[in-house]
Each structure stands twice: as C-alpha cells, then as structure tokens.
Figure: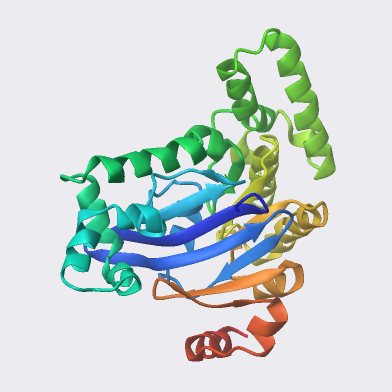
Length: 313
C-alpha cells in the first residue's frame, strides 16, 4: 500500500504543551517529486518538516518512509485496532452503529487507552502492525537529509572534514572492514561534490572564512554526501543576503533536475512556482490548499491563501 510513496505523512498532530501547532496534517511525497511548503511565519511549516524526520516527535499520527513506519503506531489510523478497543465496545454497547462509533473516537482517547487497561486483542494488533512495518528510527532518518536556515556547519572543522564527518561516522557504525580505504573513497566523493559547486579550492578552509551563500552550498553538499533518498530544506535562503540567494537556489534547481526527492519550506515564491511539482499552503496548523504551482499561485481557492499571496506577490 505504501511502497509507491517516498514519504507518507498521516494525520500528524503536534502539540507544544497546550499550543496546537499541527492539527491533523496528511500528505504524500512521491519519489523524484519536489514539494514546496509555503505559508506565513508561525503557520506550522517548519514543524511539519521537522516531524517528517522526527526532529520533532509527532503527538499523534504516523510517518512512513518507503513503506516503513518510523513512528509508533497511531491506533486511530487502524480500524481493526479501534474495533478491539474498550472505548469502541463501550460506544457499541450504548447503541452506536459501527461507523458512527468509529468516527466518535478521538486519537487522544485511544492513545490514553494504549497506556491503560486495554485487552490482549488490542495490544496484539498494535504489536503486529508495529512488528510488520516498523523501521529503526535512525535507519529511517539516514534516508533523509536536512538543510537548515543557519547552515549548522562545524566551525572547528575544515569544509572537507564537515562533508566527510557523517559518512565516516556511518562507516564506523557499520563496522566497515577497511576504514582507511573507505575514508579515501569518502574524501574523493566529497571533492567531487565540491568541484560540482565550484568550491574545491575551499576544501581546507574553515567555515568562518566563507560567505553565507558558500556556507549554505557546502551544507547542501554535506547532506548529499549521505546519499539520502529525500532532502528536506528548512527555509534554506532566509539567512542569506539577497545577492547570495540565487547561487543556493541554482544548486537546488540542479538537484531537482537530477531527480532528487525534495521537500522545501520556502519564502521564495519564484522557486516554488518554477521548480515544484506540488505546493502545499499551510495555515493555522492545517494544509489549507495543495496543488500544482499553477493551481496554487494562479487560481487560489482558499481565502487565506488568496490573502497571503496578495501580500507577497
């Protein structure tokens, strides 16, 4: 059911204390697709992105990557689990019909029950779904790379060492037999990436000597060095001076052309329109509208989207 999608985001809620930031967000990202997420500050865009690779743990809902479940099972998304719950049996006993009973049950109620006195049938179903579909969180995360606003380069490492760090650590973790040979391979790949972005002469330089645009391109290359299946970008140009934005967007366009699967939270509407296959408009914790760039930018239906676009275009 899931395997055609690279990423499957199902009914994600995210609460910070009593503040509800995401309120039931669902979407899929296909292999090779570029999805841009737009919306006003504070709408939940970055939180949604961070829930995709579990930098933020969703409060409810599920995240699937390549048909594998990264989060705990959300009972609310599995009818057979709901039917095995005491809450459901109570509602049926009160004379509710089957579907009405299911729609009455809130995710919160079932998750509370998960920790209470639920019966063995319910627990067995939850365990079965988990065992059959779950992927270790770290393995799932390794399939995704994240590029941040603030570059997050290590200032005490050279550019080359920044790029090599994660692949070398992964090789150690995987107990690669000949670590020195592997390091050499990683170094060669890192240099190839640097050549590709015209910064091979910066290999031995420290990040403090680079411009913002150079830092961000290095950060993107560092993510690429992990050979990810999906790249997530969190407003990658918002900390840059205007004249440096183009060089970063050009690199992202090149990546899109190679077929890299990308999810991009961005304020750059030109990029979203030109490069995306699909655009999501997030507002007040919901995806209020999604469609092709033409549908979203030229024929917006949602009043909040119309208002948002009128202010920025």
